[in-house]
Structure formats: structure tokens, C-alpha cells
Length: 276
Image (spheres, rainbow, N blue to C red):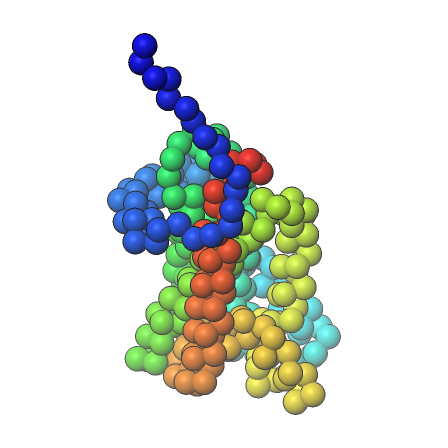
């Protein structure tokens, strides 16, 4: 008689998988990430005209409401302040949408996890990629707004490209970190809207960094978006080169969160099939 194969199920033990093989498998499935993201966009109707209009209209209406409140309360109207508010809101929603979509990515991909062997980190990467695709039309709309309002154009605006790249790294890191945390603590998804709104108020969106009182500048050290939004506004709104310290600080935050989130995710990935 042929020996019957015996399958042994070992208990989960936290630890990193063989990284070289893991990244090779992830790169081999890059087409799947693109198609999976496209299907998610199609499901939410973001590939339609009305879906893209609402995508732009939501933060645009918010910026209008906030600007009216600023004018009524502050008694001043400044086109650069409105430009800063709109551009910052668009960038903030890129990060916030990455967190929200990332928190649901692993739990939502339950059937894939249970039935298919693949690098699970593809799921939060797809969530961040979807948020980036949703962010691109808002950049085009802002350029229309800044042209209509007569903001200066110049070479310093190209600094917005590395700033957007740093923001993308931060958004990816947060998507990976929160997607893993939500597997163990399901209430994170319910808490995120309140966290995002609080983060919005504590970030230089409704106000510029230069208008912040010296006593409140201490919050800058604890907010990853603080140097990023300041650099973004300087480059894309005022056509000024951002401060090198702000760029380095934003990059350090983004890389740090990405490394921590990736380590946390990979070390716990083999436990997902039991948890979801």
C-alpha cells in the first residue's frame, strides 16, 4: 500500500517570511494588483463621469464651506488662503482614503486569502493605488482653479512632484499598517472617520504654517502631515521651493511608517487565514 501523506498544521509563530522570494512573488503579481484595483474602481463607479465628478466635488465643497467660515469668522478674504485650503484638502483626502480603504482591504479579501496563495500585502497596496488614482483628477481640477485665480506659475512648482511621492509613501505605509491592525481590532474601521477629522483640524489645512502661533508649533513634531502639507502648499500654490528640513522630516516620517507597517504586516501575515 502506498503511504498516505500526512499534513501537519503547525501553530502560528510571528516572524518574517523569506524576503527575497516574497518580493519576487509580489513583483510577479503586479498585473494582478492593477487589475484588482481597476475592478474595485469599477465596482464603486469611479470609472464613470458622475463617479469622478463626485470624487472632485466632495473635497471641493468642503473647501468652499471651510473658506466661508474662515471669511465670516476671520473677516478676511485671501485667494492664496483658499488655494492653500483646496490643495491641502485634496492631498489630505489622498492619505485619508488610503487609510480607510486599507483598513478594509484584508478583511474584504477574505475569500482570496482562504482560497489562494499570494503575498497578502498586495491587498493594502491595491487600496493605496486606488486612492492615488482617485487623487489624480483632483490635481487637474486644482490646476484649473489656480489658473482661474491667477496664481503664479514657475519652475518651483515642480517640487510638488517629490512632495506627492513622499505623500504616496506615507499613504502606502498607513494603508499597510492599518490593514493589519484591523484584522485584530475590528473597531478601527469605525474609529477612523473620527481620527481623520481630528487629524484634519490638527494639520495645516484650515490655516497655513506661517499663521500658527509659536506656542502651538510643538504639534508639528508629532504630525507626519505637517511638513508635507507645508511643502505641498509652498510649491503648488505659491510657487516657492519648500524648506529642506520639511522635506527631510516628511520623508523620515513616511519611510518610518512604511517600514514599521511592512514589518508588522509580514510578521503577522500567516495568521490572517485564521483571523478573517
